[in-house]
Image (cartoon, rainbow, N blue to C red; front, side):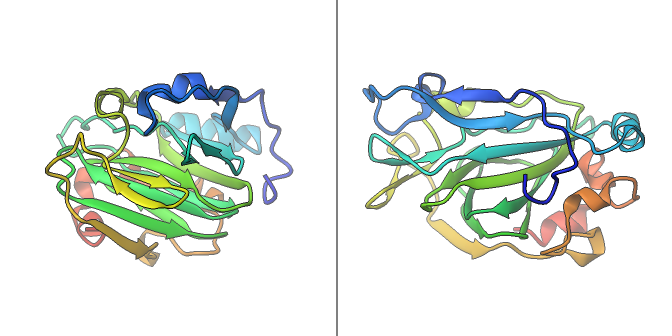
Length: 231
């Protein structure tokens, strides 16, 4: 992590092509090997780790090398977040450290599907109720970090059931996943900023640790205006 050299990284969790096969566009893809690397529950200091633990928030890093898998650009497996106790749903805040990211987000019924493009320093807030896949379609390594509630377990079943997201990004373009017959038209936008929540491109999201501006990660129902602006 170029911006966080003073954070000691643990051994990564490795997502292999074999583990990803249920969500690949090519069901018969015979490729093998590692796809991307996940470093979970990071902190720079003992005090910051204590704050993260007390506030039930996790700081992670994911590294996605450039490649294609049977004609499809490398991507994360994709997951949804469950509902919060008030029924809203947990959000997630990402930031690109290096490379170029495509965040493909969609509602559970896939009636709304949006591609958010982000480059170094850009922050992306995934709103409640949206699943998300991250795609690296560039020829450089993608390194990104995220802040997310530690109160839930991610749900992968919907993506596995539909063999991925509503759209696939092939090396020769985008194609709709036929398992989503009612999927909406793919909207494309750049990542918006939300200064009122401390989400400003170029500002390290790690600097939000210890502040009062991350309450929406665990209590999104109290931040309805913020999430309306995302849709």
